[in-house]
Image (tube, rainbow, N blue to C red; front, side, top):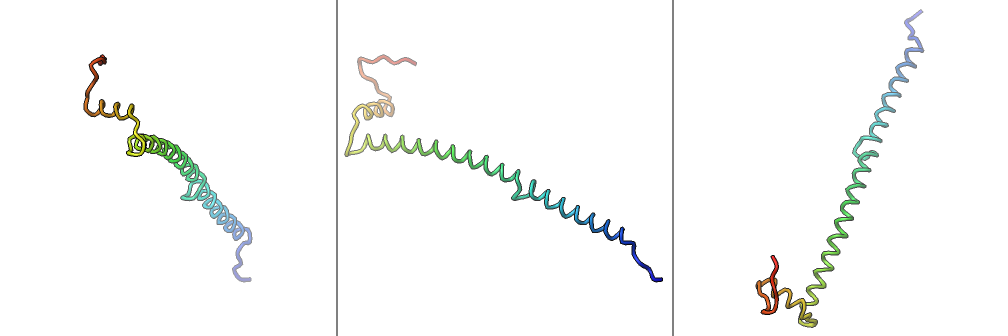
Length: 99
């Protein structure tokens, strides 16, 4: 008879290839560019950016309020006095400076 391969060797090679392909896809699903670990990193970064955005929005709102209070339409004299003192470094005669 001719040379016949042992079917057990063919099945063993097939199973080894199947395990290697399965291992590759499992690794890619966990550690790859779009894997679970990368998703957790992106989520943590997004949370950090959301926190920073809310902080910046609060700062912008505060600055808009100060700008409105010093505008021509609405002038807050106390704020104007505070800003003038801060910028010019001046005090009234009845005030005491504590450093």
